Length: 170
Image (cartoon, rainbow, N blue to C red):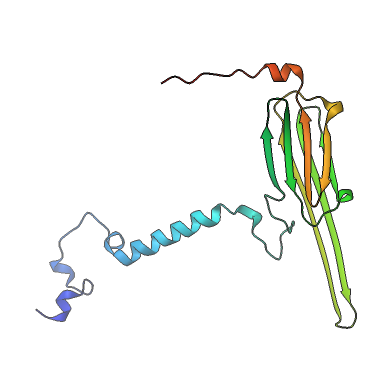
């Protein structure tokens, strides 16, 4: 047996047994290469357009700010982390269709004449959160402290009574 017999390519094509598989499907390195490419595609597809780039419109990305929503019996509480912003930079709106909108904008400009350095930073976000319950609009409360915005939306009596507890059977 010679070394040439061990190498799968460059064999005499006439002596070849026809196969159901294409050469690319039998090659383990090519299969591994395709699988690694597929895995990377899946991972980076989850990032969407939120990856930072030179031409991106928003410096914050798609999911900023981070929002936590808790649904209690009497109220809905929305907490948003907005570090670096001040109260005057944020706007909270409750629309007639039951959607809570959080908007914010941050502008910053730094200039150092000694080092001949100048930097401008601009970012804007808008998060729309469907509430899903009737809310006492005149009692909605928004508070801002240490970069955390907390909006409390008290439910109406009708919304509180619509909740039905279901027993779990085994």
